[in-house]
Length: 312
Length: 130
Image (cartoon, rainbow over all chains, first blue to last red; front, side):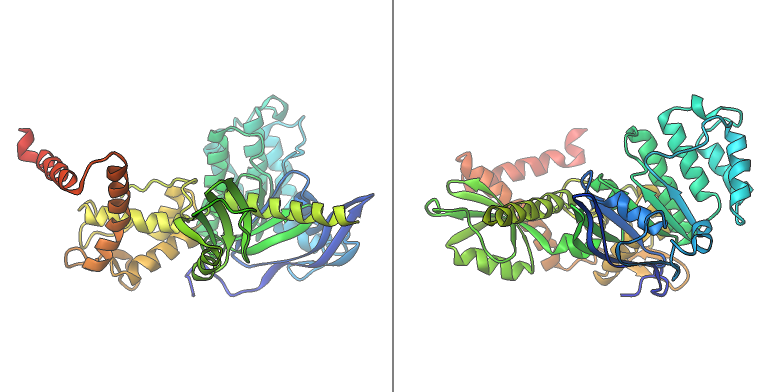
């Protein structure tokens, strides 16, 4: 399908087989991922899943122990100058120079980026209602986040990397920031790498979704495809089954007695047949939300891992 | 055109848009020939990715509800409700099933239910209120 907003596929970010270990902890485990131009990729994962470590590899702040990272076709570790000025970056801890005033921050940032757009910066400052003369250390958490987003956007970067940008912010500020992000996507077709644990944000802005769990990529694909290939079936048995119903494609099973809810992945016709083979009647069939899919995916790998550990 | 997205109903956002536009057309709140908001405008209004709106419009176009005029935007299709009768029935079937199940549970038989629907239909006619 050719939608008018898709530019020709050119990988802006290309990550292949990247692993990274911090002491005993496997922070990234053979992660491969590609983001093409004009795409918005939403990266989902619990705290500690490896999202920030992956972001640091994209920015060239960490060198992959194994595997390869390319951004705009360049190695961000050896060619940071070819990469960093083309990226707008905002992280959860937005380390801004706190002693500066807002207007000083804008001047200071403009010196960094050859393509800084002063008019755009000023428009964003007004839109975010940031006082020119206010000192950063006097700003609220939400205002600081908006100041960080302003700096990330005002040089009109080809790639926007947002690592938990709305973490710890109130719903009003979150909405304001999301609006600004959507506006740049809508008006300029920008490539965005967006990590969050807020699944409704991810669903709103992403074309593609990647889910991480303890360093591994457990699911990656177009958002619509992910949503349409997962189903929540409610099964009813004539008599209570001796064990929870299990069949190919079932990711998580909940219930007791006669009725069980199964979150499953696959073509609806196939999973329905599999469920009926167990002697169950399908009493309800609904789409699964991204939240439910995430919980089922992450929960499943947890049980698989526990099972293998028990065997050892 | 006012759409309201709900993040937790398990329907992909583009499907929510399609369903709501269908409803607005059926309810006469979107009329034939009316221009749909441009993709970028609706994306910004709903705070969603423009590709999601593009996908919803594409599906609405395939269903015959809207027509794209080359280089001039997207318009609600002419010719009454473009939904085929079968499609309209399909939209209602789920709700009818739920109603029947609830009625059975409350021990209201089909005759009573039909009677109740007639009664409600009458009370919704505007002249009855004045």
